[in-house]
Image (cartoon, rainbow, N blue to C red; front, side):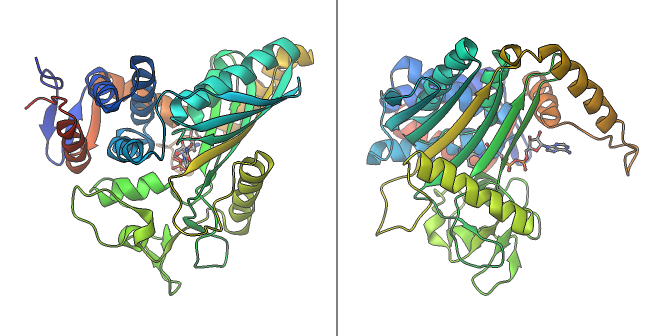
Length: 371
Ligand code: NAD
């Protein structure tokens, strides 16, 4: 039996595939590309997990690029997170350019373990490959009963114009917070760019179009055209952000631009990961840096009050009269939970060009993908 044979179905411009099958295909691709089974499994689980959460920008659309980076040595298989400073209450960890799914998973496990023992831990991670959807790591901390706060940057990837500018200075520098409320965990997780770069990729492959103010051209005009970022491309070509002359806009005007700057400085400078730029000549790949803070409400002695007060307040917030009665107020994490339920039941819809690019990558590695 070839992978993808059983329930993958084409519907219009969308290739609908069961999550488990997609995961099997992606795992096989990374195993064939040189990753050990455990690492290939982790990469596949995290990428498909992003699709399940509805963040297609950080899902399997990345497969061709990750394989390309592996081939070029921009990311390395088989690396482990190395503790370079152990301050007890804090750790500094180096990823040695390993796959982000491996490095961040190990790094988060260290922070969680310390915070569960001592009540809190701060972990500075540097030199990791792309870690994907940051919310996934907040969810790991949630499962251990911990609050977590994550500032992330991408060294070597200036894509975002600061407030009032047309030139790229920030990475898409995501920020995430997880709050472990019983029955209603909250996960706030977003890029500080108006859209994540992967959403520009998704739009460029024929997926969801960009909002009208997402990109800025070199002459200061708002744009929705992914070519502003990538330059010209064919339907199934890899997208390279260096190809275009414009930028993604920071979200939230001066406030979002300020948060992006702080993500760069905390995740890029304090960790010694390096910031988005300046770039001296072409850089070999990108590196995620992450400053994470883990807090244990149980150790604070306020667990009961935290849960009671937070829940009461959250219910009051969510009960605010909606502008449109058909669209009640949501909590951070609600859209992801709803997507997960729907996509686990009904399959993961991929733009056909995304699937075509994955199939090309699989074929080049001799991995069967079905008819
Ligand atoms: P987004 O704009 O979709 O925002 C997502 C956040 O907003 C979530 O917390 C979600 O629960 C919340 N949300 C969405 N709609 C809501 C509503 N109606 N009411 C209340 N809350 C709502 O996310 P994004 O900026 O496109 O980021 C996508 C992903 O990209 C994130 O997972 C991020 O971690 C990831 N990312 C990773 C990197 C990296 O270098 N690894 C870089 C950038 C972004």
